[in-house]
Amino acid sequence: MFLNHICYRKVVDVLFALWELFPVALFQWCCNTELHHYGDYVDPNETTIIVMNHRTRVDWNYVWIALYHATQKPYKNVECICKGKFIDKPPDVKSDILDVMARGKSKIKFVLKDEIKSIPGMGWIMQLNYFLYVKRNWQEDQVNMSQFVDYYKRLRYQQRVVLFPEGTDLSDDNKRKSQKYALSKKLPNYEYVLHPRTTGWAVLCSRMRSAGLVSVYDVTVAYDTPAQTELDLLRGNLPKHVHFHFKRHPIEDLPCEEDELRIWLQDRWKEKNISLERFHREGTFIDFVSKNPPKKNESKSLHMAKLAYCSEDT
Image 1 (tube, rainbow, N blue to C red):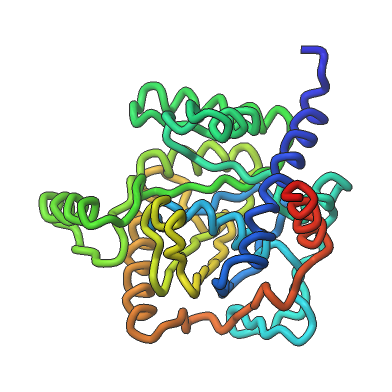
Image 2 (cartoon, helix red, strand yellow):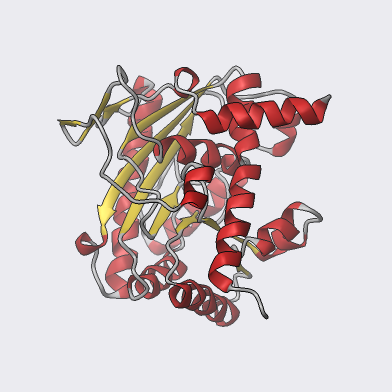
C-alpha cells in the first residue's frame, strides 16, 4: 500500500470514534437512563487492556458511553473520590489533534466473536477499524492475536483493548453452564458473573506487555433492570440506571508468567462477584465513592453529535 499506515490508522480510528459519539449523544438526549461512573480516570493516551463482566448482550452499547465519560476530565462541583484521595483533575496527558477531536474515544479496540465481522455494515466497519476477532479455535486465535499485537507495535500506536473474558452474556442458560463447569472443576459457584476464560487473556496480556502495555482496568457493570438482548432495546425496555466501576492496575502490579496471570484474573472475578452481590443488596458500588452524572456535563463534541443527528433526521 502507498498509504502512510500511521496516518491511515489515526484517520480511520477518529472517524469511527466520531461515528460512535452518536449513541453517547442519543443516550443522554433521548433515553431516560442515568449513568453512574465509579473509580479511576482512564488515561486515553496509554496502551491498556480493559477486562469487563458481560452482563447482557447489549453491554457494548453502554461501554462506549462509559468509556467516553471515563476519559473526560472531571468537572467542577462533581464529586470524585478514588482510592480515598480527592481527585480534582486527571494526570496531564498530551493528545494529538485527531484524538482531541474524538475526545478520548478513538483507539478503542474490542475483542469480538469472528462471526460478528460478517454482519453487513457494522461488521465491515469494525473490520476497517481492525478489531481483534476470535474463532474459539486456539490454533487460529493465537496467530490472529500475535498479528494484532505486532501490527500496533510496529506502528507504535497506543490502543485500549476491551475484552469480555466470560465470552458470553449472563443469561440463565449460560449461568447454568458456568455453574456446571465450576462444579466439575471444583471452583466457586458464582451468582452474578460467569467463570472467565483465562487462556486468551493471559496470552494477550503477556504479548501486549512487550508492546508497551501500561495498565489493565478491571471494569464492572451493573444495571437496575437490565435489557438482556437487542430485542429488549427495540421494545424500549431500557434500564433506568447503569453503573460502571473502574479499577486501574498498573502493569507492574501484575505477574509476568501466564499461569499466574490466569490466577490473577480468576481472583478479580471472585472479587467482582462479591462486589456485585453487595451492589444488588445496597444499590451502589460503595468501595469507591465517585459519581459523575454525565447529563450535567456535556462537552462540545456531544453537542456537535446531537446537531449532526438533527440535521440528518430532517
